[in-house]
Image 1: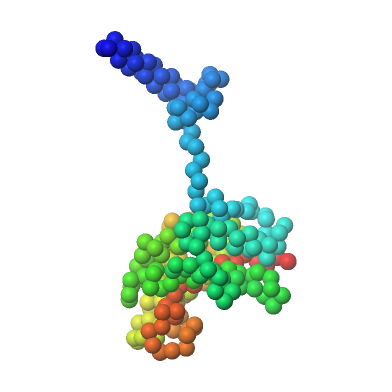
Image 2 (image 1 turned 90 degrees about the horizontal axis):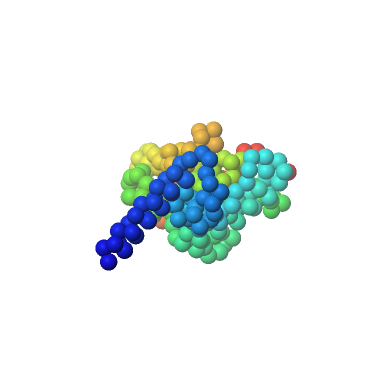
Length: 234
């Protein structure tokens, strides 16, 4: 029994040495290229089914070939698929896609051509009351936008923070501006979105209400991210 265990340990040691040599040597034996050996030695890892795979991507130069509308149509479908695959299903409500804490809208011109995507993040989901610190859920939702901008490099964005009408306007204006900056910072630091791709980052307090009321209206508390192309191409 001891002899068998000893032989087994020796065999493992030999295989380990072969693995190290094969994975770190410039000139590798042909048999090390086999899928079985690669899996055994851990030289490569099998591709995981990542949510980002559902997003798709387009290389630089695609905008001129496809035009703005077609480019954004691909982004729209990919973004929707990416959200839904990662556990945020949408329902169609009044021409928009509404999910938990987030809404995806199409911004079209008079001829129904897609010109921008609007991602609306629920203010109550994104931030603690009265603060500009992003919640984990907000970071998760913003990550989808960041992934999309990385995958579709000929895009830029505009970010706007909005509050309800409760409290002093000056305080709400300051808070809305700070919240929009928090979203921008998350996109810059985590997704390496460069400064030039942020066309506007601002806060508007309650100047652009969805529901015209002075009460604590939930729909008015939101962060809006518009994603468009770097230029309009027909």
